[in-house]
Length: 302
Image (cartoon, rainbow, N blue to C red; front, side):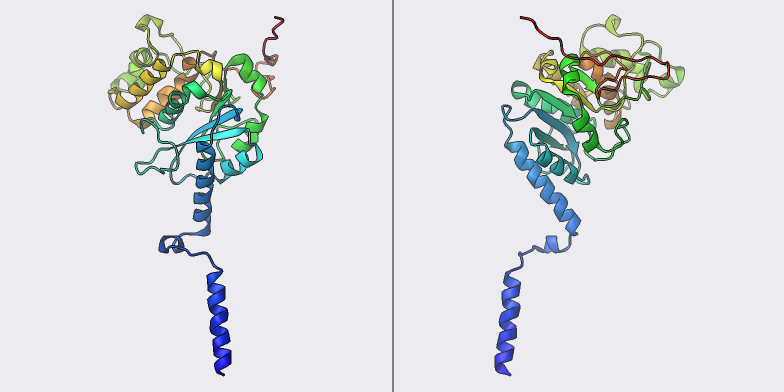
């Protein structure tokens, strides 16, 4: 009997040793939550191993603790020429990730922080996206971002410099804001539209006379940029924009309002015409019947 008891004790002990030691916090968490944390850790390793000579595309996004980035971890494993640049946006930041220079404006501060942080060491292409895999903003290839990204034509990015990832012209086109003619409702409600001329000048410089009568652009703050297009502006411009994000005193301008302003102006910031999509080789026909010819980079004969 004693022999059997000793054997059973040894078996249980050996089996216990083979199991990984888990902290009390881990014991209270679900396997899914633990897997999400592992994905963040693997992504952070990729971030901090970045080298501009070994990366073709930078994927730029902001993240809260609730966001699930397992899809991004899997995507960069399948597409190693992509490097993620993930900015944490919680008041209690995830220190493994990048920390933006401001926490206002939803993804705006993360996008501008990336441009400023990496201005001198940008990859050839930067794609700015939202963190969750499924986005209603994605239209042509369905809602999954991991279906959109591999279909993007880098030749179109080369040719145009800036491309919105969304092809649908709604919402935002042909006209989204009339800066010089806000409605009375906007004025009475102190809506940002009633201050838009001054906001435009504060962000982009110039004078009130430089503000266009109408502004239209495809929504939803997901776009691709070439390195050359980002550097078309001096770094100081982006520093000024981020300062505005952090310090703006426009009445009732909360973080959501700051995000809306830049969603309206990203194509202007990066010097691109509004409301055209040939990002994926699809150029219509549009409801009007118009068919566009896909853009390609100019061929140098030098």
